[in-house]
Image 1 (cartoon, rainbow, N blue to C red):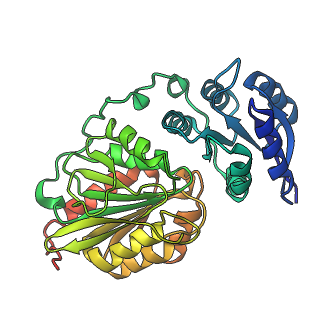
Image 2: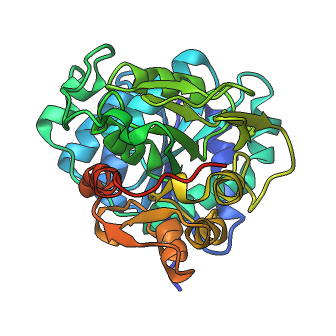
Length: 365
């Protein structure tokens, strides 16, 4: 089987050497070249036609984000970002994902050599995933640094009529991984201000989910925040699992509460969709609506089937609109989905489901 051919782009000779070493140790991939800046990388990409590139952000002669925008508009290909674990690094990484990067690796601020070696499995898994991902050409408007979807504070127009009391005891559960930051944004942008409470597990490392929540909060009609342990889940709000911690829900009298806990990884992930969806099946039952978005692997598939068995209504993103179809495919294979829909139809389907069941008796514990 042909090896995945990778070009590494980073201004640090140390990082270039480490990434090349990590990649070349794998039986199924090879670092075919390494570039110190995007202008050198441009010629390598043209001559070598790699399958995947890893891309640093802060580099001489051309910023990595500017290069990524040009690349995804003119010659789209799978890109894994290598970002510094800082607040600014998180913001820039989220912009890279908007532009079409498949995923990112958060390199440490100190101890880079040891840190990258410890991340070797994560790095190579993400390169493998990127090589299989669906890559889409970026429109010239989206490639601009001032695109409307990336301007903080620019709230989306309300796309749907208010739900009123239809949403007060319902909760939407969303699970996502690779490609999920943009897919989740698409769903949340199309929910009205009085939508049901939304709880989200997106596979992200510590240090990025707070910036991600703040970015979405500046765009959506509902409020979006990083989940805090013990807080009440309210309509018109979305709660994102903090990176490195599991999120679940529990019942307290008439209220649902968020529970944020440390613990062992589940399905190799922390936060894990399995943990969140299992609590939905156990605690929320028919008041739950489940959504499985793009992502690699099968995290959450079994628990989503348990949600369906407990009375939840579930929808999975279809293959054509996924960056990676792994998680939705596994959930569908487990019999967890009532519907399989393109991404842009998922939010309308949730709202239609809420309205169509408004006359039914609401489950109360």
